[in-house]
Image 1 (tube, chains in turn brown, blue):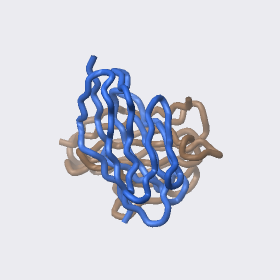
Image 2 (image 1 turned 120 degrees about the horizontal axis):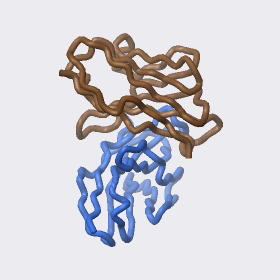
Image 3 (image 1 turned 180 degrees about the vertical axis):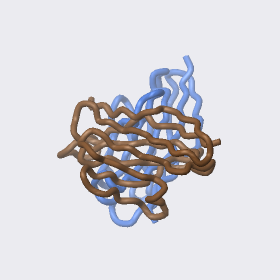
Length: 117
Length: 113
């Protein structure tokens, strides 16, 4: 099946620094990608919808200036956590929609564990 | 609001045991229901789905029935294998598309020989 590569798989950073997470669709083009966040023992929560060539759509309560999303090509979306703080420590997952699909055409990355010291 | 509640893990079973992972939901309208599985080091994969009441989704020996009266979509397998060890996520969609998938917290399953 289709593959979505997410990098890095884990990252540790100091408070106040910025961290970039990449999400690539390796063998298909994705006009739409999604970013999720999961805190320990909580549900996977949709943060934002990333659309190629346009601004991302953020869910209620997600700070768009803190979580910068760029989807400059049909195979790459990036999430930058700016000025990270310990409360941003979480598991971040991306997914990419293969065009013309139903939910079985949604492919997920393996996630990024972010730890902010 | 819309939400999904799963039983807390981890669930630890011996090989060939019967598996049930409970999932209940709250939703407006008529959601579609899904089970996703995440094997170690991999992304989530769709395991099965059901789009209307009384539908049964099945795949790889797993099955789940959409029960509107109990707002449930419990995952079952008659005989688990070590290779089934993974994290299982129940999810719903009220929009019929990807953009509003709502997930449960996930349930880790560990199967021992």
